Image (cartoon, rainbow, N blue to C red; front, side):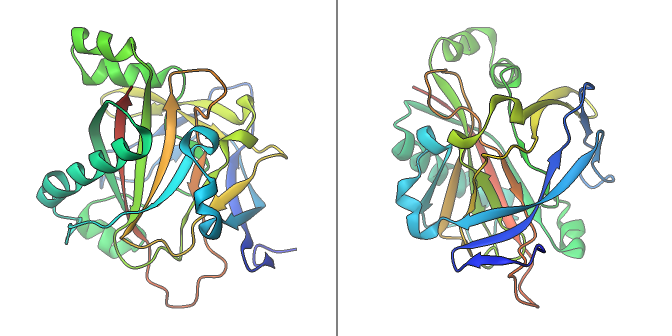
Length: 276
């Protein structure tokens, strides 16, 4: 069996890159943007993984049950490489969408990341490449710390006294996302030890993410050929522990069905902090 094996019209098999569990805490070293490659410690294994196209069943998935949700969502942004357009037009659009989907009382956008697959265009734009390693952006440690980093002591105390969550909003900003789409794992199929705490080393600070170890019950999904008028919400952290989804594993993957000449992926991911 190869990575090109197709199970049926709505499911494919592709390689997902998992971290091999070990006693040593792994680390990821992040250079300044445009200043070299990200380096990861530890051993990784690429596994042929069934990934189901969830587009036809999109309404069945929710942030609280599965950790992700898919939405039709038009944008007025013309050029996502224009920071002014992103912050003045797109940020307000994202706030409205996240409030409508989650019912949150407050939505605070704290950053965004643009990823471009084409090497030359990525270098010119000084942005990052898609990440083909299964991961989640936050842990029990770094979720609360993000609030302390963003706000003064008084405002942080108010946020920490509520239920709060980190929700990312992912969108294709070029043509349809075909070559390296985003896969997400159903949070209800994950084991707690699938999320492996990992030091995230920046030039000026140390954070923590989770890289993902493989387990048999995981179920992975993607939404085929996402366009710039569609958005995927991903819950990366939730402060409550009542059975709802708290963390959502995700990764870019190389699509074995992508036709020759398909446009390289371009995407934006906006990170929001929400409070109830």
